[in-house]
Length: 225
Length: 79
Image (tube, rainbow over all chains, first blue to last red; front, top):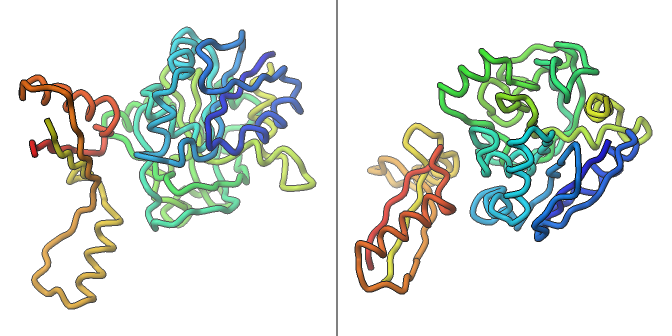
């Protein structure tokens, strides 16, 4: 399978995600944001970082870059798209995912390993996980406080479009296990066709037992099927 | 033609920065303070003599880029 990682000025998880993809035997290609065409690919990854220094709003400027038009076109014709951290923020700015990411509740940048629970494993991104499985994944963000209107929140629940929720080590989803104030502890969501996943936690940082753990591996290996 | 645009979080969206500024002002002894909302401010100049057309452009600028309409409101005024 082929993957393409989009690189913006200020992206800083692009190489990490490329390492994770290659470890899972993706044929990966890096694509600079000024490109106007995408290579033939099965998966597009929008990596984490601080595209354009988070000017205006996180992801707002990157969301208008020339390659994004192609990403939107590819996504609308069914290509798999994964946005991690700043990549999730960019996807909400493009409108490919609904809602937005507000400043963390406590106004502080949070960099720590947290527990997240797999809510829906019936997707191409999560089929190697079990429902309700608890993963330990790193988060590193200042704007991770997911917010959407009540109509969309209903849709997320009814159509099983929530991918992950923040929880404690026992899998309990509550206020204490919510690191950033996100609505309903939401850590990641799908679009209605489930070919797009946006998530704040960094699975690409969890693909090596020596430096962290391998809880993120199954996300990439789910996709390779 | 010059305009100013202010962008603020919608009333139903929590504005933690504004809240912190408000609490600090209360600590500084500002007893008659009611509330503080923090926002963004832009000064924009357009090459246009017709005010209606200029305002249309500014509106487009706001909706296309400056404002996230899910969480923010904006206000335009002519300088």
